[in-house]
Amino acid sequence: MEKELKRFKVLAYVVGVALLLLCVALVLKYVGDAPTMMRIIGPGHGFLYAVYLVVSIDLAIKARWSMKGTGLVLVAGMIPFLSFYAERKVHEKMQAGLPL
Image (cartoon, rainbow, N blue to C red; front, side, top):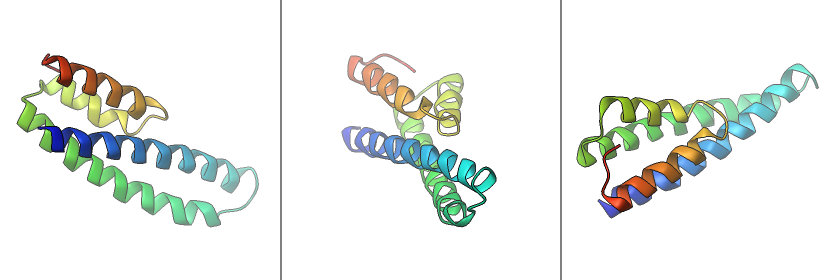
């Protein structure tokens, strides 16, 4: 289970950073009239989020998370800064052997 947890941790941080970059790109596109960054970051974040979903669901099945806990972790990748918080909570609960 350590390997799956580490994979989740890395992807949670990568998706979180990509989402923050996406927010910056969005502002630059609409405020600064510079759509280039959005064209690069947008698809990249979409791909990374899809990988995050697969890794999260894999960990959820192996760790027997509840449907609510799994859903919250999946949604965390769509809200800026929330994936960092979700990763920390998942790590704490998994280390303590508590259900999510």
